Image (tube, rainbow, N blue to C red; front, side, top):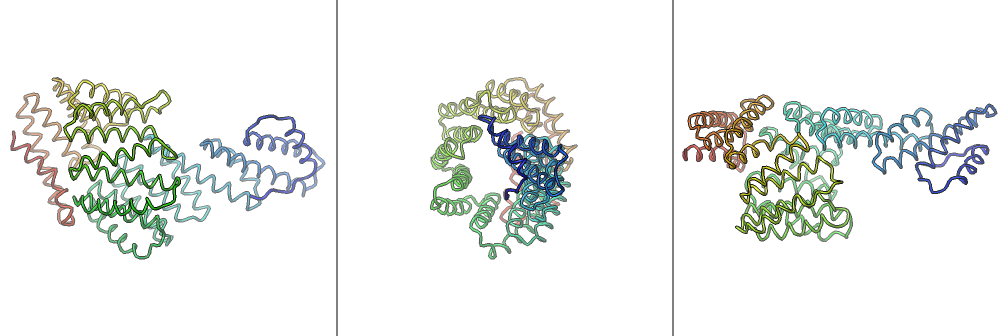
Length: 488
């Protein structure tokens, strides 16, 4: 933004006010300058040219105040300054940043709503961000925010709405012709399709991404595409193929100059490699990668208490798989111990849930129950841990309580996602397991049969759309169910 030439009266008044202040923040200085402009505008001795100049100076100071508010994550306050500054901003070097700040503020507020499961709020802010980016003529950002809006619907289990919104995002991205919009949108569609078994959609997005790959020259985007194909290999059960792709990505990232971007890329890649090592039974390799990731979560721009908790969870899982229960318990304790009074309740809740999962692995069921229930008390949005709580009650000899909770949750999932959905079949399976442990054999058998029917229906309707490499993972839930039924 360029500085506006202002009348001498304003300059003198500003100098006097500034000289009288001590140790004020840059934002407060900008607000004080706005007050000076208001004082001058209240006078009657300004010409039309001088008045316009003072108004432009006031708009400039609103832009400065907005910038400092944005830096402090004070987005609502920033929007108030923008609303005051835009009507009087005529200089493009002032108006342009205000419009950009407005779009960014709405986006950040939408992200907060998504991260904290305030879904209606997230949609409202994303809609405002979409319109703000349209005003700026940035179609690639419009596509990006529509994709974020689809994430809201997906997280809220509004599957059809999410799919419809993703189609809009892809249309905007394709029309923009910008690889920075097209690649992330296609990878978002593939992730959604994997999660909700939309196999025709997955194949279409995969084909589009593969067709686009030869034309992408940006190194970061090429790395994103490689990561996506590694995730596809993982989903199809080709863990060694995925590990080879991520190992190649890691070598490229290790050769980058040290800096914030390198750290952010490394922590994601190391995380994937740790998981792949675990899947292939290389527990020592998983531990080594997780320890490297733990170091990244403790230093520099990637420092994160929540991130440390996630890594402690994985380390506990690694040692439990090796049969080292004592070390697994130590890391289970670490998952919760990093919570501080300053930790946001939403993240504290998640960390307690992770701790509960770890304690279940080490058969410390009372500790697991205490941690899981604390987690859901801190934030009720973690409904997906209800099956864990129900099964933990069963492990504690309180199966009847677990049955009541599990049946209610299974019905809730069926109502939200469909009584023919894979997730509903999974909830019926959990219900049957708890019913069996309580000695309700006939009820358990009925729940198992119903789960089998739903699973078979999914296979009949969808198997023909599934690539051969993904069929094994798709039917794994069904084969597990058959094994359990045979046991009973």
